[in-house]
Amino acid sequence: MNPLRTRDTENIQYIFGYLDKKRGKWLVVPHRFNLILDNNGGVVGQFITSLWFSHVYEPNTVQRYILLGVRGGINYTNISSLITEIGIEEIASLRFALRGVLNIVYHEYFEISGSKTQETFNTVAGTGESVVINVQGSHNDVILSLCARHYQGGLYVTLPSFARQRAT
Image (cartoon, rainbow, N blue to C red):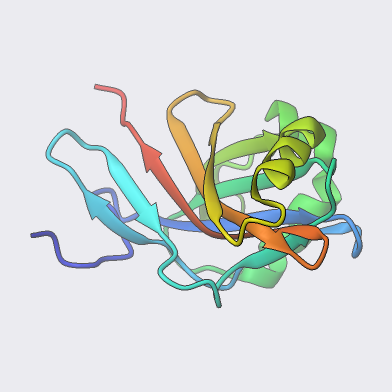
């Protein structure tokens, strides 16, 4: 059994951010993913409590997320400010190279369409059940999974996890 760890074999820590439309900026959650490493260099990261991240989205709202790998110290506030300043177009296309800035050595962008948010909302509305949303990252080497359920007329999203396969 692998012990819980927060750094991979390359000493990278993974953190998570999301675009908060109401505040008009990216927020980086001040927690690191707990990691499980496989023998092939793959990494699985999990937030182990919904206290670390949860957000309610209105139906038909686009959800935007970023996974960052950081080697060295993490300044969550400065990283949030940096990706907010960069802008969504650059983040989405990964045109802006984050490598080396604020110790960032890896970044991946995820987007869940408004129609997918609506479809998920329709699936869980009134059921009291939750579902898992999976979304492929823009580099195609990571899948982000989020737990979603109906909550007060919106879609409550929490418990992000990711699976990253390393190139051999």
